[in-house]
Image (cartoon, rainbow, N blue to C red; front, side, top):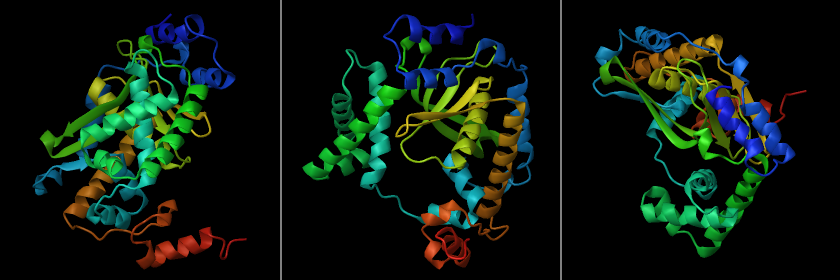
Amino acid sequence: MGTTEKIFSEAKSAHPPLTPAQQATLDLIRLPANERITHHSTIRAQIQLELEKETVNLVDQIDEPLWVSKRQLQAVTSCEVLYEAQQEESFEWKIPMTRGQIFHKCVELSIHLSPSRSAAELVDEAMTSIINRGDGLGTFLFELTDIERAEIRSEVASLLQTFFDTFPPLQNSWNPTTELPRKVILHRGKIVLQGRFDLTVGRPDEFTAGRVLIELKTGRAVPHHLDDLRFYALLETLVVGVPPALLASFYVDAGTVQVEAVDEDLLRSAIQRTSNAVKRLLQLRLKESQPERRASGSCRWCPVADDCPTGQSWLEEANGSGVW
């Protein structure tokens, strides 16, 4: 029995029986040992070489490093005009945005706090911790009214209880981590790829994949969630030297998980998408071409959609005008 298989087996032996939903989730995020891939030792160097060769003629022209996260990749891939609008848009916290941040903090605390807390207690601990940080989100929460904070507490506590009812309890021997940062430096710092994984369980066994990267989603499913996780698979491979075994999006409201196994085809697709996007980001920074407009679901919340004929045309069709 492999390391990852052993740590997952504790869910059945050392803890109360799982709910049907918890068991279904565990069955999906636990890859059998005979299905795990053993990768060659040079995979890390090969991927870095492929990512760098597409931009080698552009990086010397930039003065400041290009920092790339899943947000920049998704924006420039869906619509380059959206990407540039986001670069110019100032960030402001809004109440709906706080739900996911507080929820993720609750999951983090649930792993490390002892004795265990109820969902409502974890929400209070999380909000107090965030407010005491004094950063942008902390200040925003502190300045809300008592009623607004109470409404947020209620929403997040309900969400967290759904998570506890549908996701298997995290065991220390699973090596769970939350908010795990990954940073990849290309071209001696001219390009930096970065990400932060919501939750991971398991670990590789030498060159055999064993870690599962899990994104906890508090909203609806959208297609680019798969692309985000594939980008994270690249980051994991470039930092650790071994790709993850599985990628999982857990949709908390529904208590369901979507899983994708990581193989060579998936990695190659992620390499191509990432290298193409980074190349375009560099070209846009260097003003080598005009940003392209591409209509997509992002038009629904794009800050410049009102002045974009392409976006308005797509929205009219999506809202039923001219659609049979």
